[in-house]
Structure formats: structure tokens, C-alpha cells
Image (tube, rainbow, N blue to C red; front, side, top):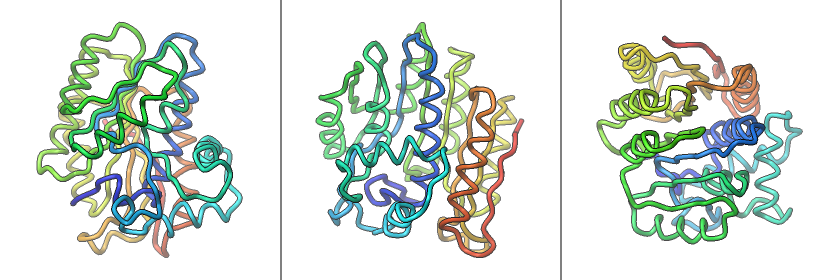
Length: 275
């Protein structure tokens, strides 16, 4: 599949991922010590929902646009505030991807390393990070390798976000290899992985890979419909490692709300532990 951020900005999967990201950043930043964040597949970072080249699927109309009409639970406060900030309170014309959300949250003294290989998106990302308060850099480099490199070099706290477009056949394998290498270098690092759900076997195979290298992860699923049409994206999942205490409850609330608000009959949300 091709899950490039620009094509699907503001859809249901972004809402799950970015609500979790903003809540997780909030918890991690309760600690005053500096935090380093690595974003392995950052994309452009900010998306114009009216631009056909940036949001050509129009999935935001069934995602963030519909969510804007509802009363939101507290787990969505951070994301809603970030969207309002980027739009100056006037509707939802721009949707913040993970780079915008991260640089809006980080403090002076924190560090952000954002990776994006595509020329155009890397250029947009570099311009976005130019105004960051934290030390931020846009690297046109392999995000998996960069995460391991930074983990081996970093002395303080580390958070790694892994969110590939799943264009490469080996993405699932490289994710697990990267997580294992990061945690070997920094055993207390926090890692959050985003995954599409098309069919159950693909997700199960990913979990088996985690278990084969003796990793334990919290898995949060948001199935938007039954998994009976494996050629389409039927939901998404987050895999979290070394999450703050009690964060499973936040993942449960986020997944359940998105499924209830935007899902189809037969959809379901669940959070469980693998490994």
C-alpha cells in the first residue's frame, strides 16, 4: 500500500495517531529534563486540505471535518488545540502532521530530528522547522537508520515515532529491527509505531516479529469496519513500547472514540499487550 502522509492528511488514522502523539508528548514533557524526539518518516509536516496535491484523497472530509462537529473527550484536547492554533481559529484548512505537532510541543533545550527522503517534502519540512523553539533538524536520510544512530549517541531521554508510508516490502521487518536496535542502545526509550490494518494476518505477523525478538508492546487497534475487504485500509493500530504508566487507558479512549464517531457497523476498538 501507499500511505504517504500528504495523500491522507486529516483522515481517521491521523486522528488516532495524532491524538495519541499529543497526549504522549504531554506526558513525556512533564519531566523537566531534555527530550530528544526522532520522527523516522516525517513528511512535509503541515498540509493544506484544499490543495489536491497535498490531500488528494479528500479523506479529511470524513475525518477531522466530522470530528470538528462533535464534543470531544479530553484525550483530543491537545490535538484540537494544535489544529486551532495552526488555523488561527478559522475552520480546518491546514492540518498539522507530526512535525508541526512535535515542534509546537517541544521546549527550548529539547531536540527534534525529522527524517524525510522525498525532495519536495523535505524542502517543506525544512521550512517548517526553521521557526522551531527547540533544536530541530530536517534530515534527508533513512529514518530507520537515523533512529538507531541517534539512540546510540543520545545520553538523555529519547522518544522515537515510526510512521512509514508502507511503500517498501520490508517496512514491517525494518520496523521491528529498528525498535530492537533502539531499545538495545537505550532500553528506556519510548517508541510509538503506527500501522495500517487491512487484514488480521498482517498485524499478527508484525506482532509475532516483536515477540520473536522478545519485545513487549501495547497494541491499540481502531478497526473502522469488519476486516472482510483486505484490499482496503479497514483501520489502524498503534504499538507502544515503554509508555508512561496508565497510558493504555488513554489509547483505549482515543481508539474507542474514533471508531464510535467515524466507524461503520461492525467496527471495534481494543487495546491489548503483545509479548
